[in-house]
Image (cartoon, rainbow, N blue to C red):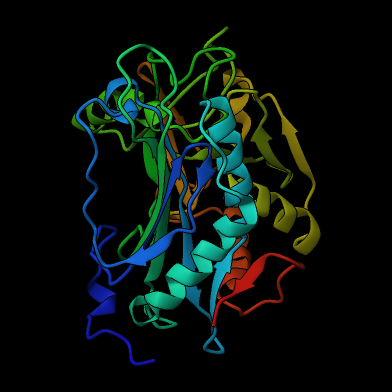
Length: 341
């Protein structure tokens, strides 16, 4: 299929309306068949559950053009499973996982002309989301829901390459103990907006959130999991019941162990041991890995040995291996790549 006439290399990480989006409605205890539509407008009652009590959740994944010209998605089954967990925690009906993955396939096929070409640095970002659509005035779950999925071509998260960022240790908690930190609920991100704007205003790129119970262990940032590398090249990721289970993080851990032969540890990471690490990165769908060069803990600077100029060597290996798998340059583990066309 002929691609859209777009300067792919100049794209930002932002929204651009594409041809089709998928919409399905839940009513009287069942989901309808769903439809691909050109209509990008959402019309709901002013008393909708999502507007009154923030009953919503979302996901994010990408479609790519591989080196050999195929259009693929990366592990969409895990996104479907994670959204199932989010829905169950928020008392929302689960959109069947097989239909969820098929909706991804149908959506990308319908917008194939918008999938950026291989080597452009751009990808097709896919945003599935669900919200309570019927009127709710008392505090309770909605009775009707809408599941939607749109896509948009996006440029690389970091123009000109990933330069190490500076983050601060936050005084604000991201999630409550035994709360909703482990699911991808819209309300979690709303809670972080004030703090990320404040961080930017004070010259920081992100916030390091600590565990809300003791404030002594590293959790995550507003939108990404942490990944550390020790001086003997062990890859360490924080473990906590209130951390969102990042698909990128899980994939990087597998890559570290199975492709690179590195030792991996998933365990609680105390803030006090952060100065002992050699490298640090933030991992997520948008950037894969964002290298961290400096962490500021209330005026005390923790400077990672990997520095402020480029990714550390292990982080770079992890990044190149995972993106190589995604783009078809390296053989993928079974089930990781969903071929679309």
